[in-house]
Length: 170
Ligand SMILES: O=C(O)C[C@@H](Cc1ccccc1)C(=O)SCC(=O)c1ccccc1
Ligand SMILES: [Zn+2]
Image (tube, rainbow, N blue to C red):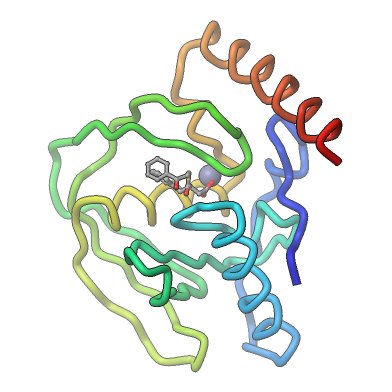
């Protein structure tokens, strides 16, 4: 099922997500719904926080054919290099706003997958950027928080406009 995505500056996006204790059937359904919602919204990632579920769960799919989703439960990210790379980020909770954010380009990701198997990988490039962007969501951080006050104000105005247009489209 498609889930509603919270829009900036909704305060619920600032909630700190809690660890997943057990991958229940309900959580497996949530994972399926998040993947469907991510594809429909044309995103490459989605954090549970964005669909108002405050548990440490992320889905990502960087594939061309949108047919290889990855699930990260209770993820932990450790930067592996000092230098930062800047990347033009977007966010499904801040529609039509894109801006550069600097992040470490290579990170170690430790997590569980939906079957409870351990994930422990070194990743770089867009996957590293996306994982750090999603991890921020689980800590109540949104990428516009890294931008200037002026850009944050512009982002709020832009989201308001986009939501009005979407309302009219019904
Ligand atoms: O809001 C989200 O978490 C999804 C977000 C993930 C993300 C995209 C780009 C950089 C970091 C994190 C999106 O999928 S935004 C929409 C999108 O598909 C996209 C935007 C910019 C670059 C590449 C993809
Ligand atoms: Zn986002």
